Every structure is written in C-alpha cells, then in structure tokens.
Length: 376
Image (tube, rainbow, N blue to C red):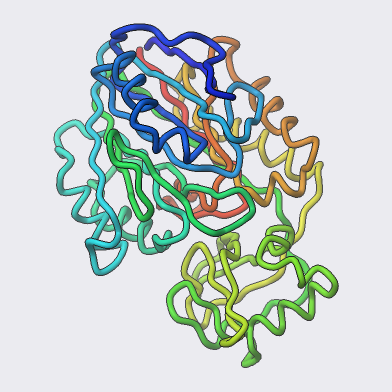
C-alpha cells in the first residue's frame, strides 16, 4: 500500500500533486467551495486518473495529528493487491435511507467483499435507517464503518463528494476486496450519563417530541438554562444517552436542529418511543481516554493488522468540549500506532462503526471511531 497526502489551503497545496499516479482511492475532506470547483476536480483527475474520489464537508479536517478548517485534506491510496468498488446515489431518489442503502449495496459484488466504508450527508439522511439498512443487507461477516458529513457547528447543510457528483443528500459506499487486505475498527466516547433516566413517550423516527409526557424541547431548555439560547450548537455539550428497549448498550445521540413551534428536537438517529434517555456530559480527561481506548480497540479487533492507514471520524461535540486541546486526542491515537501509519479523517455529525458489545453496526454520536487498513 502506497499513500500520498497533502493539504489544499489558500488556493495552494502544501505538497505538490503527482502526475498520473496509480492510486485507486482518494479521500478528500473539507471545503465545499473547493470540491464544487470544476477546475479543482480536474486537477485531481489529472493527478490521479484511476482513482475513486470520496469526500465531504466537515466540522474540521484531520491530517496526521493536526486539524484544519476551510481546507481539503487529501489522502491518495494505491493498493498493491486489493480492489475497491464505489457506488453512490442521493436520498431524494428514494422513499427512505433504508431503500437507498439497499439499492447501493445491491450494486456491490458480493464475492470477496470484506468491508464497506460509507460517507453520507449529515442533514438530509436518517443515519439510523442508513445503519439499519447496512445491518440488514450486508453479507454476513462484512463490517461497515464511516461517517456523516459535517457543517462546522452551523447545522445548515452538508455536502458529499463522489467523483463528479458534489451534492446535498448524497450517500457514497465503497466496497473493499482482497485476500491480503486487513481491516480493523474501534470506537469509544468517554461521555457519562447523569441525572434521572427518562422515557421517550412520543417521537417520529429521529424527531423527539415528548419525554416523560412533556414537550422535549421545553424539558431540554430547562436543563440548559442560559445555554438554551445557543441551541442547537450548545446541545453538543450535553447529548442524550439512548437505551433501546431490551438492550443494555447505550448509544449517544446529538441534536441536529430544533423546532420551536412543535417543541421538538431532530436528532442524528432515531429516538424510538419506549426507549430510555439520559443526559450526558464529559470532560477533557475522559474524552482523551476514550480516544486512546478506541485506538487500542481497533488494534485488538484484528490480530493480523499492521496499520498503514487510519481513518479517524470524531464528532463535532468532542471538538467543542476539548477546545484548544482537541489535537491532543489525535496525538494520543498517533502514539498508539506504528510511526509509518498515515492518518486521515474529519469531525462529523455522526459516526458509523460496529458496536462491540452486541456485534452489529451502529450509529454513534460524540464518539471517536477508527478504521485501520493494511495489506500483507
């Protein structure tokens, strides 16, 4: 596996692009204006004519142990003996996210499929339906990781990029094949629930209407106090722990938007009626420990892996809590892996990674997720 990386900022590349390189896969995270430029995309095609380009807008781009804003962080991957097949489509062409992911997965050859990596719109796509579709339609034994595009802390619109398609509502699925390809994955948050558990008494998919028979938004605002004026961004500091009926594992859910008229909140994933929810909080030490544990979990998930590429997808809420020390969660991950491992990724509106405790793919919020790639 050969990897080239560069960062595009202020209309120039930190490292000049090659010409006609043989990379099969380009990860390009960051600035909407750059990825929407025909000239910019043509420049990448000239440099990497054989590559499938996958990217999205973010709440911060990750390259190495650094975070960038308003850039394009580029990672080009040339596999020595593995293959990649990429498909994409927009949510507007389907009834729901489950139908979309089912259609996309049907286009991927099943024979030899080892892993899928997904980049999805973070505003228009229901992440829970997307992940449920992955769980239902992926062949047995095939893992899935990825994330939902970000938009800083504005929560207005997100954009996803696949080759010549740069669109809102787009979902991209990359399938990976090869006997010599090794994949690892890990995730952990570092958030802790506090206060009473409450029951979701009224919801519609990812729209939370009532908790304990009270308007959800009023209850949440009452807790936030003076920070309520900063919604929905201030909700990133206090997400909800969601526990589905019959399951012991808790998932973290982040608010994407609010509706003052209906007193409701829209979340990155579904909030089923009858589930319990609980407020969460965290601090610097817990989030850093969570990032380190996610790295160790990724290594232990595959004993054969010797990481050459690590894709880190973390949540915008973690970035807000960590503040100026946010790069320390990247540094502690970097220290866990071999010195020749390259790092790429972004801060997101939702993370996709297997839930270790129950063995299925899950939608996470406020979590550091890590996907490792290597070839024998």
